[in-house]
Image 1 (tube, helix red, strand yellow):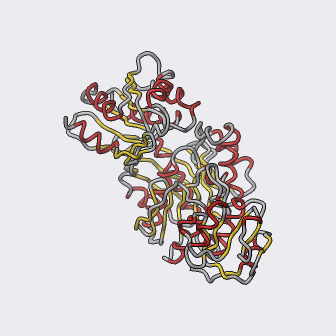
Image 2: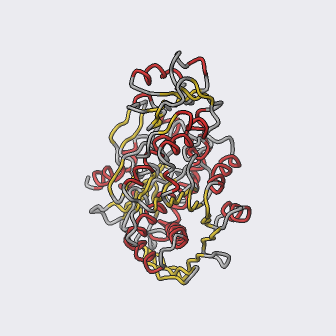
Image 3: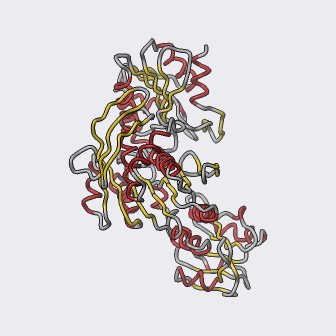
Amino acid sequence: MADALTLDGLAASVAGKVLGDGGTLVSDVTHDSRDVGAGSLFAAVRGFVTDGHRFIGEALAAGAVALCVEDETAVPIGRAAIVVPSVREVLGRLASKVHGDPSSTLRIVGITGTNGKTTVAHLIESITAAAGIQQAIIGTVGARINGKPFPIERTTPEATDFQRLLAAMVGFGVDIASVEVSSHALTLGRVDGTLFEIGAFTNFSQDHLDFHADMDEYLAAKRSLFDRCRIGVIWVDDAAGRNIASEASIPIVRAGTGDDADVRGRAITVALDGSTFDISGPGGGARVHLQLPGRFNISNALVAAACTNALGIPWDTIADGIGRVTSIPGRFEIVPTERDFTVVVDYAHTPAGVESMVSAARELAAGGRVIVVAGAAGDRDQAKRPLIGAAAATADIAVITSDNPRSEDPETIVAEVAAGAGNDAITVVDRRHAIGVAFGLAVGGDVVLILGKGHERSQEVAGELLPFDDRQVAVEEAAR
């Protein structure tokens, strides 16, 4: 952990006004009053649901030595504080400063895009491990430091947690960290104060319009990653990617399958047990045997390869690392059953993601049918629901069901998704029953896709988290 800093020093780093004792020593920053400890500065963030200023008393009672506030009148007389116009806007920089600017020591690869972030991050983790490099990963399925799990709550943790985690990585001797960077994280400043060695872009399609005003704003959030990195790796088979690459002010490595790619995949063969292809790029190339099925995973592998090659890892080691990955939790994960059809679970929850899964399954089905079980989450982008239904309808049979309804009526959500799926779609609100229905329709050679929840082990219904793992439920239903 970095040495404690004075409040005066912290305030100067964010152009804040100091109240009270500017010599107060601060060794940690937190936005959550429940996490306050010795030496903590409590940052009173104004959130969407509540205002951190309300918890100042609790934070001080828990031992906070100083505060960061927007409302000067909320600071009790005699208490030390930094006053700024926006606590959220300075939170990442404060946390980075307190923890010794960990991103200046680490080589961080930040991965953004609508789909594929988790797979790219895992492939980079495997490649760096194959190279004998101390490595870490932060993303949707959790965090790991040198292979050991660290639980986190979000794809990209809040700024205080993120910088604390980066500091822990430095303490463990990590050199390269692969980090999923969501559009929420970029918009809300969760990665502020972080310098990325490489920013990677996978693809772009509709998502998160419950948070972003429109697609332009959503893309602008993704694009902003490239304002805080040294090198960009862009998937240029995607139209948005080509646009980002053409306008970037930093060095860009183009990954793709076309002649304009700097890191290019070619001689591609695809099968249910993976793919084989050649990579050519700066300094040479390699033959790659990818055990992850689906053509879309070739693009993920090429992005990961371009990132790690830019970090100086040799092509033969890159191929070795890619080949070591046998599966990624909830990402086109084949679930073993005793049935004569194939069951695949995936996190796909966007129209493009669902359509991509159906396309991949059709390529692998070898003449069999594709049956998809899909739905949409509650309290999220409603506009994409009929589009998910339309994407599901590209399968031979679409079973529309619940995802995580949260506070909404699941029957209403199912109806909105089904509206885009056409008259042939089957609607089954209960998710377990829907999986059973799909299995009852499947015959030998078919592929059943169960989409939307992937690695998740619970279903959120009316404020409750109920145990529900698509993979486990699939095994149980297949055994009936």
